[in-house]
Length: 279
Image (cartoon, rainbow, N blue to C red):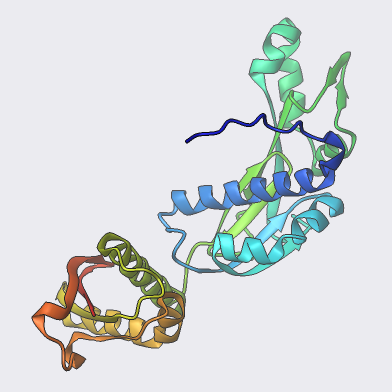
């Protein structure tokens, strides 16, 4: 039978507004990093070496650092650095007028005001961010009237990074993983394939099974060896996640055809890998 019960009333006194703000700021960083990954075709499963979170407010940076460990895991980066010094990272702040907001209000003055906003110095931009407003001629500007963004200076010492910003928040993400991180990314994709197969086969996470794999096809013998090496070098990571032993198909012993639970072939990088689950 189904029983209905009135939902209890929300006690607004129990809401931690400071915690809500912390997570809102955390989400703003996550969204920008995911956007950079999408723009550079870097799946979340592939680890990256370094992320800079840039914001002129020390309070903002202190807030997001409270969720540092969660951010490391969620964004799959090895190191996060928090900084107020955008210039030291080779970034320049840029101010642009929000035409949609200013057009109707300024009318004939729009062009002159827009030119002055575009010419804002770094100090004027920081003053606008700190005050939340600015005055240009006879017109007051609010947060919805001026959009702040960042660009990487041509002479920046930060190479290999991509930047994305939302108002005064910017993220700099290293988008060129080294070979070790690329191999870890392949291993994590391999793990994901195993987990999907276990779910498809109805195998519970605690059920003991044997997992074997084999490269069926690759563009070159060199790449085939690299995939094997990537998995072998990260086998401790793979087995810690799947909670089972994993081995190459050439090491299958004492297994009958009737022991086979599921076998599938799929793309892993530029190779086709076959994965077999056995009782």
